[in-house]
Length: 439
Ligand SMILES: C[S@@+](CC[C@H](N)C(=O)[O-])C[C@H]1O[C@@H](n2cnc3c(N)ncnc32)[C@H](O)[C@@H]1O
Image: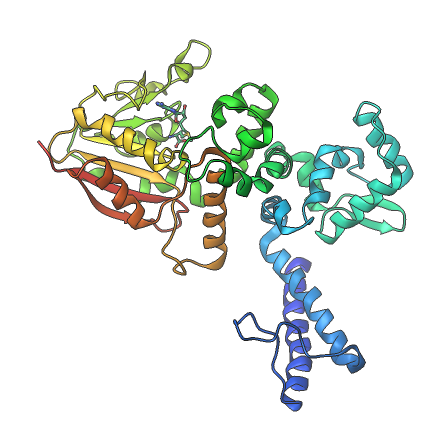
């Protein structure tokens, strides 16, 4: 006997098939088209309310497929994607933003139910006496329920479901929601205005974030000014980076590290505290790593620790990648660096590497990227293209398609030769391998 959750999926698929048959039989019998997203398709289903059972079958189908869709996503991805539904798409995530901002998930008991009146009092307490009238809260929560956040098991009483519990219990999910819905809500709505104010800008301080918050700092300097904001951003990025496709294992397996010469040195540029180098070094004992990052990462308070076993082969050092590279190595590795910079600055980073390059030196990038249009599944393409939009919102940077990577290296120096651009199996990140062909 399958678990109830599995049985439910089977039942849903059967009901969906049955409802679909009612609709398609009706359309066929009446020689009618179904609604379609084709450019010349029907915008509305030609089933008037008078058609009783058939009309209802269509409403049922919408609800059933949404349920099956939500189960297939699961609460974690569902909340993550919902937070990505931005204000320009309507008010769909307004209730989610309000839940995060007014700490509503904290006001609902984990076990049991709470009346809207009691909830109103609790929300007031949690928000230092701020008045949010019961009718406003009820409106927010009942809207959120249409997005499968909270339930109302008895009229007038609210309880958690798995989605609201995630917001309550998971700091990364709660930060993702706050960051996307609240911190970036207005900047997203302002992107077009920023594009009008600074046409074609590649500067990281001429973004919609600058316009919205009335300040002229680049993104990272801006968020560092507010510890709570910076913390929320870091946790939100951790929520985004979870999942197999972003794991360090994909970096270890995704590139033929064993093709580098025995005893080769790899410089991990912007390598943070070295955790990616640690993983590669563990898997490839004949490689050495120099992890470079900003001085702020290497103060006595911030510097990470190289595991004892790796100490002879991994060093944590400082280097600004906009300044000429001084460490001569066999390969230079950049993970999650270029997608944060516009072409203008990415070219500068590649040019600063040139003094250290020798014939055959490899440049290895592991980064976000974009598939050729229509070549990835819908969900993957949507996620990558959404991330691309965010790069414009915050830093005027972008994700790149395979040809964009080739153009970038060429613009930096004709002596760079891009050997390959690929997304390894199971990965959500791309590899780009280039070689220095100069002297
Ligand atoms: C998105 S993180 C990527 C970290 C790491 N490579 C990874 O894959 O997790 C970007 C890193 O670049 C570093 N960084 C930013 N500007 C830099 C600069 N001018 N020179 C060197 N590192 C820099 C940051 O401190 C941060 O560690």
